[in-house]
Length: 263
Image (cartoon, rainbow, N blue to C red; front, side, top):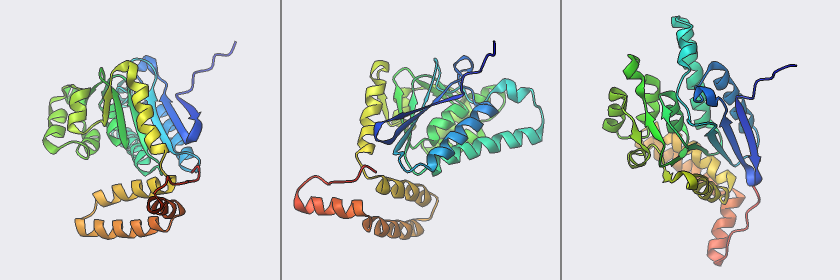
């Protein structure tokens, strides 16, 4: 009898354009093997071309959210060229999340360490269970988490990010929220309800406005303030010409709820 391996990423489509991608290596704490990263990249690339998608949730099976890179796989290939290719692959995956046209939300129910913590930081939003914990613990193994540091330093204050990187210590969900790594924290049994509240709020908004806004948000962060304002002004002018914005403004004037299309 042929034994087939379970899919590395489970894709679930829900009403209103909500898609959940579930990391599915529970026995390996969802470590980011080459195969898992390749699969997740393909799923995200596919969703990027689907105009019906409104919000993407990245979740995980098993006890952990993601334990980072697959260290056994890394140790089995002690080559500088291999490591360069591996970390570039991971960087492409992380950037795909940022360039996806719709918001990506991390659903963090367990530990997120090293590149797993990086994954949380690269998602546009994150909701965590109160029992979740976060660390960039590579330094404990003699490997400074340099690539996770790129994401962390763009979410947390510099000193908070560097403390995590240089100590490798865990922080709890409440501290992660205080420092800016996650948006909301809920008790484990309320995690999905809190996630639904956040995604529901986004789904109620016009896709066109959210897509324009997400793209501009990240562009302006990397610009000087004058260039950022110029870009933002142009983006708002384009946004204002969109039917959803024209309807929204008219509805405000008319003192009624806007009547937006499904997308």
